[in-house]
Length: 553
Image 1 (cartoon, one colour):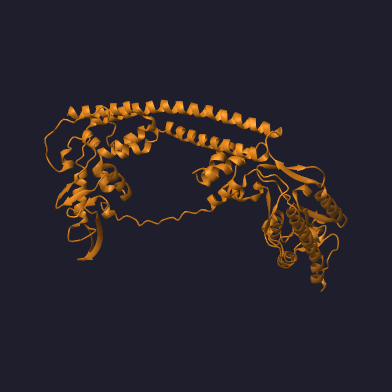
Image 2 (image 1 turned 135 degrees about the vertical axis):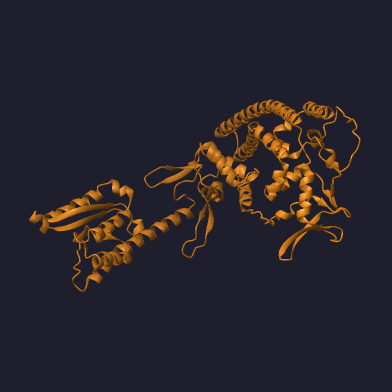
């Protein structure tokens, strides 16, 4: 035990520059030689750290094992006498790093750092020169290697060759030890072509298209990589050569074959370069949510509003947008009158139930028509795919030129994209559940006062827009509208209040051939696309049902 206490405790550090070198025998060889040295001098090895990161950086975060070793030495500074490595270039290839961590390890922790080959005597006055010499030589060698690599890449790009991993739609092929090329990947190239066609001509945003193809083909492309791919001139047979030294950035002809038509590529660039101007709208005043619905009783213009300060508070008023003398009323009073006026709508529960049942029947009929259309679209897609296979075979056999193939392939793929979009829209319509929409709409009608009093101003405006198609005249304490929603007249009990007048009940004249009657927009806006296939007969049926409900009251 006494002999072990008299031994010098050391930590060994071995390093290679890459994962490929770590798989070889370099790390083991470094450790073997260091252990032999320690055994010959009877040194006790406490720990061995093996690193596979580059030593050209002066940031310890890029060298995780060196950071762990430094943390271990800080905790056991009184036990460790030395840190040993094989050569100084294993310690670092950066002169700044060498002096910084010499100070942190040797001067602050009292632990000597040294190399097995070319050791430095830090007790002499020449240690700084020797450390700068050994690490500076490694630093210079690293800079030379980096420059030669950049020059080689720049020269390769100027020749029109790919200097790195081929982008999506291509694959790297090695013809010899030092001869590589790229060729079109028959599996992924059609997908990339579809993406460019859709970005160029589809109304969908590029981010939505990215999500769509990630979900369909499991591409795992993030947003930034997707936009970089759309801007890459490699797909039209060209190579982008970045600026280097005094040479400017340039685009040269590539030695590979492009898979995207230049016209389509240009359309994509115009599409992604367009940035619509976002209009910032002013927030609605919660006390003036009736501005777009109230009309002046004298000139018929829409009312506006303002807030003024007086008597120790703020007061809001509605007034005519042309002349304030026409009408000027407190907003609190006008809002209260309007809420009482709108809440005179009392739904008839029996008519609501009948209306809901009829709408669901019509929806079910529309679903059948949608399924029929989707079957037709699927058959058409199979026909287009068969045509694409035919032109691919003709192109491979040399019966079609490049221009003919690009033109025919582009036309068929455009038809395929359009058909797929139509099927996606039909699928969304078919999967729409209208039950919650109907329940929500009927709940609004049944609790109008609560929503018009406590709901956010945006929701209030949407509700009023659904109930009243035209403005409402405010005259004193009376509100009148010249037009009302006829369906509301059917499903509500007290409809004369909406007109602001009393009149005799007259039988409705019903034209069995007429299809026009104003369904409430808050009931049909969310599923208007789904009911697009509803025929004349179904609408006539629902009109008859509603009229019967009205006549039976």
